[in-house]
Image (cartoon, rainbow, N blue to C red):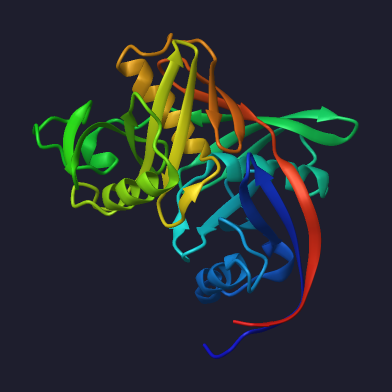
Length: 293
């Protein structure tokens, strides 16, 4: 297909704890499939465009109330995103696309349930039933050097350090590492980028460094697959609580407060499913006068 000219393309900008997204109603715009990835790269580029961690399309679904597709700022499509889906749920409710307090959302991970907390016709916060975590190595996927069907607290040599990581998928792969002292930006980039593309992760991985404050509280910093350092990662925060619960660092079936660079989320891992609750905020509405893709 040749060049696609988009004129007066309408979009909205949202963020969930600083994890920011451009949202486009693809029911209206019907962007060609082969142009979605390139459009994400163009719109998410900082300084020269809107700038964002990712691009979210609102699509029709024949399986649920509505469908979410999310592309990272490098053009790769993600299976799921915890912060992104809260933004998505707020968008479709406040734009009268799905006017329900409980919304069934189709994603590449499967059907997700969003429960909107409404204050004055606005979505104040969103709780997402993230479903059960995936712990089997072949389903994450991750390669276990211990030839186990789970990868729990395994050592991995990265540059000048040896970390212990637990592999969890919340629809996308995560390497969760517990540290006594949080990493600075340079360290997070250096170690995070190396782990993200390590041979043990066939589809790459999001990387979370977690400092435990108590059995009900932690601090998480994230190097997100296909993005880099982000203010927050909803699926990553969920994965961190799952890993911490397995390792006995957190109380089970108790809401855990997780602090990220962008703010706080409340995560409850019941042992069967993971509930995530937090805010989503609309930043602005805009129109791109003319764009070639």
